[in-house]
Length: 280
Length: 280
Image (cartoon, rainbow over all chains, first blue to last red):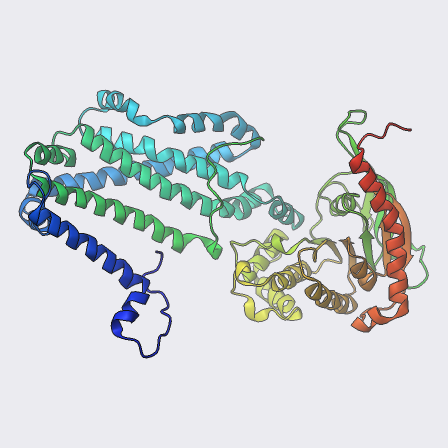
């Protein structure tokens, strides 16, 4: 699933259709096309139009009820901004707190359990509290996205710092590296793959937090419009709006993935994510 | 060079009554790793520390390199006391091949080593390329370590130890992760290099053939607590060709080492079966 263009096995003398079936890309496209066609068929001839509409009607609604409505477009844009701000804050604070906690064995032993405990709490339980404190506007969505996104970043930064190989530190010291050199040239670069694992998970959870808060209560955001469409039994624009949210989520996730592939030195893979501190 | 010269100027490393105990004396976890070790190593000499696993040979090497401070006793290098601090201007370490930093390319790994050593930037490329050429790896300067085979990585790692131009090279089981053929080829390279550069090398290994093939002298170390059991003189001049391994003298020395170690290995095994002998 990682590459769109993969090497195709050379099959001599077979038909173009057989060739296409052997390419993972075309198999994937074909599968999606079949699902869309089935939905279209079911939506047109069997479904109750109050609950489900075929993909063609959803596409039509996208142009007639979403793109043409400046209020909905600005609500979507607001949602994008909320995600961006919440994520930027989660990255900045998550990295900072992670570096402080991971700096020494002592600080990790003392503080890391607090983070893991907080991470384990299902935060939806606090939603009314968040709304009460931050109000009905974008602040609550940003706060909720931030509080979701920060934890995986902290956890993976700490894990990445602990993961450093003793041999690398000893090697650097034997070459005369100072403690600052060890941090700059060994511990931080060693942490990068793990950091990106945290950034990817953090992005997923930030999206979850922001969209949860949007759907829970909203006076003019995406959540408000989804409720309006749902309550009016108008599934086509509802589906179109939901698809917009999905596309936003995919774009954000892809941005993080591209950054990861570009910025990880030495093309290393992250170690396994560690969500629990076992033993020492 | 056959006669031990008592002249102090000829001694590169002098180990005097080094004892290393881990944990407080008297406590049940306390382990005596090294027991009163004394050894003088001449300039340009290749000395192997050979012993069963866990006998403290790596500990001794780390003490010589200033990475640990011994519980008692002292080490002097070129007449200067090693006081638990690395002396990167005099001593370079070569560990297993995985000491190369995977987040830096081969050439960057050299740069960072030279930077830690405080060598001016203008010399970095020159020195790195000279060392890489010496091991036949010059065309891989821009590769990341993960893109190289294990044997290639160890060539690079050896070259990194050489490029800093210290008089002394401490090698801690550098070939342990390699297959036997690669190990032998790299051993030949090392013998060649030794003859060219006249470095003093202390080499920790548990391979009998490697010890005999490379060493001027082999210090056989007993099972824990580590003591020098015997010192074997190999007396064949460097560089040594693979033909040396076919000489009867090679097998004799190898068997002699094995006979000495066999008892020690049995002793270690007995210790592992019955960790606290009752004195019966």
